[in-house]
Length: 152
Image (tube, rainbow, N blue to C red; front, side):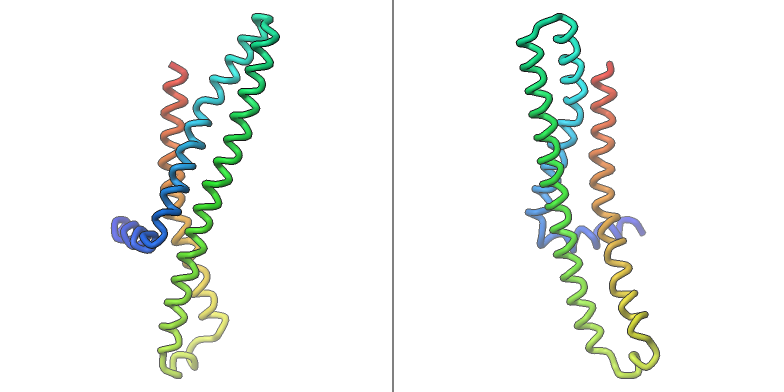
């Protein structure tokens, strides 16, 4: 079931919870900046239309700062999530390899090396992508609700 799958993934993430929390925090900051930036663009246009040149330069600097900050925050978030994925993949591959070495020789007569390698590598990426995709979807929903709120 989905609950068992998600709880298993969460258990694999527990040793790397600090990286996961940092990644989620930066992902939340990225989402919040993404909500605020359209408002900043609107203020930039308002100042331009009003003819306030000093206000326009200040608004451009703020918009540029928010854009750069958004890119940096997103990069840090992606790095943290990738680090967690790599660590979990490495741990699971070590566990699978140790279990593979404990098999009888008959097991290796029935399975080719390519088949064993494919089984070891294929499922890990799919498993980790599902968990992180759920987190990204959660923040996308928050961003959408924030954008609707800004439109009201």
